[in-house]
Image 1 (cartoon, one colour):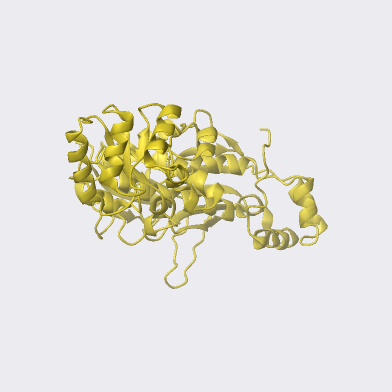
Image 2 (cartoon, rainbow, N blue to C red):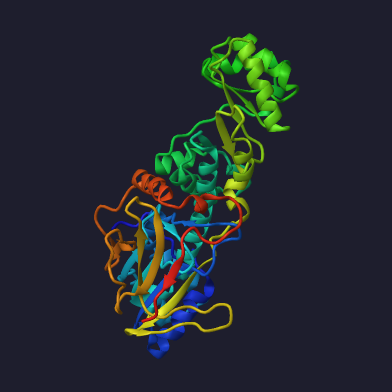
Length: 429
């Protein structure tokens, strides 16, 4: 597979110094299994969302050391390690929960098999992608549920790192957001993009009416006018005077959004603009969206809370060695214990399709007795370092998540604190 951009230095220094020591004592060749999982969900969350899988597969296949990376590492590593890295390609197997799948504490959402030298140095890359994207997707999924069918626009690029902004837009779209303001996300992933104007556009004109007229002349009457630069009531009146009752939408970005939305709807209807939509933005999160559910909101724009995971910027995933040369191994330190052995998982469902339990078991041990509506969750992602054929695209993963959320018990969709949406049982071998 051709390399587009090396991801080899998106890692920690110690990943490669560990490799050097392992090459020196011979342990680099031992066959290992690593798993990515979380011991607990963020406070208040009932489920996690697997996101970033496609980005991860791409990053792993491009985890190679060109002359540029090797030159950078010459002061750090010895000649044997540099030679090993010059020939490195991940050549093992990866299985995982499909992108868009739900996960819970202990779920083996990614299983990596290969030599210690091959699989061990992927830890930082794997965790940096999955921890970010899973956190954003889980927050976005909660917002989508709270919006109850109304569209959401991702618009958080100014509140995070430029590369994180692109990844966040993808995770939000996976979770059900309708579009993004980020053009790079549109280019890379085919996500619909949109946007109109900021307050500065109004302020640079001598009057609000001039600003609105300029925007309509350029973008058409179907555009969205930002009406809260000065006074919302006057802004709405001016917007309809300039655009006519066929104006596409008005956006309100500040104030008591519930009160302002009701007033705006009454005013628009009174001016004959019954089809003009109301777009709300301004520090929205899933709780604010839920509180506005009864208000006449048509579209939500979400920025800061989305790209920061709405208070949970990481999914708290870890990457642990669970098997060496076929022998289970496990970390036993206090509060951070793990279960040894390569694991798989099934999810149990009622005949109606509602999920009731997740059962995690050692893959080479005794599997739970199958029931009619069981589904095995992990699927192959890479074999001998190559992506398997027919991996789902972003649209398919988006649909997968929408269908997975429907399987949760109603209590699992609550925004309040509580136990995971379904119980998880971990079977000992």
